[in-house]
Length: 295
Ligand SMILES: *[C@@H]1O[C@H](CO)[C@@H](O)[C@H](O)[C@H]1NC(C)=O
Ligand SMILES: *[C@@H]1O[C@H](CO)[C@@H](O)[C@H](O)[C@H]1NC(C)=O
Image 1 (cartoon, protein in one colour):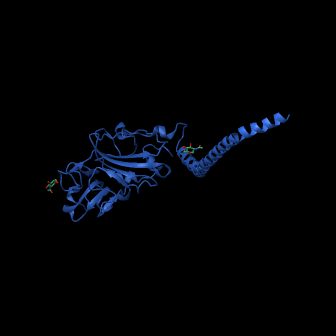
Image 2 (cartoon, rainbow, N blue to C red; image 1 turned 180 degrees about the horizontal axis):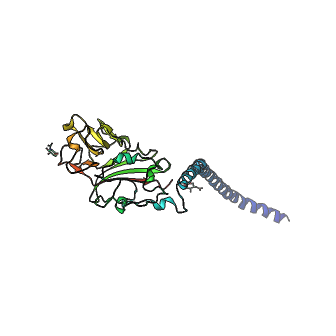
Image 3 (spheres, helix red, strand yellow; image 1 turned 90 degrees about the vertical axis):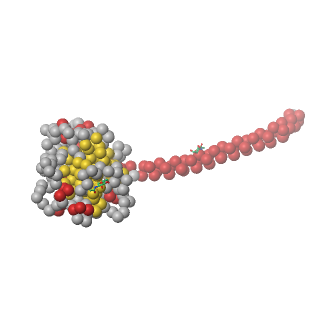
């Protein structure tokens, strides 16, 4: 009994202290891990909270967009299946046909007057109107209902391209976020362009940079650097959009060409619009939009 007791204590003395010591280390390790996991959990919870907070508002915004879009649909096919996608991956919103003796601007601002009124279904529209090829027949300025739906769409970018023989000669690309159908076409929203002397930061600012342009002179979709008498007029882009006669400059009328005419600088920078060696005529001007697919 006694021997047993002694050897029991001896065993305790010999074995417990190192055991206790090892146990203490293990407990400390576990505690450290728990602390680390707690720390990570707190961080993760914070992130999750941050990411989920706005979900109800975001869902209801998406819902609203879908309901609005569905209102424009008469069948079950989704509207986005019917968008006309260009080679650049953008959707066709507007396309100007020169020479047809009707104002491109008036068509652009004609709310509700679109060529795809029934849920973006394009009906009775010549095939050429759905392309960037200005050599193909088109009897109108093609206007998609996308322009009327502008406020409801998650528009990321808007591109204006001037084409000749189906080749984009020059372009302007705009930030379309939170824009309306008209105000995206502005210097402050310009992200990039073909020109070395034109950006959102260009100073002095162009004297015109808007779709409405200078209505008095029938100059729409107008990006112009300066006036100063007809001989001085210089800029990057203009749609001469009214029939003669009206108060204007000789550079704006071209023999044997009816309105509208699409003038653009064919140089790397702005051109004097009188200079026919650095000013080109486009066979179409195309406005296309890129949607934010993540929304
Ligand atoms: C805590 O998070 C970091 C970074 O993600 C990770 O490397 C580490 O293993 C995590 N710790 C625990 C205990 O999960
Ligand atoms: C037209 O532009 C070219 C190239 O910049 C220039 O060399 C020429 O002098 C200009 N012509 C006129 C009439 O201004």
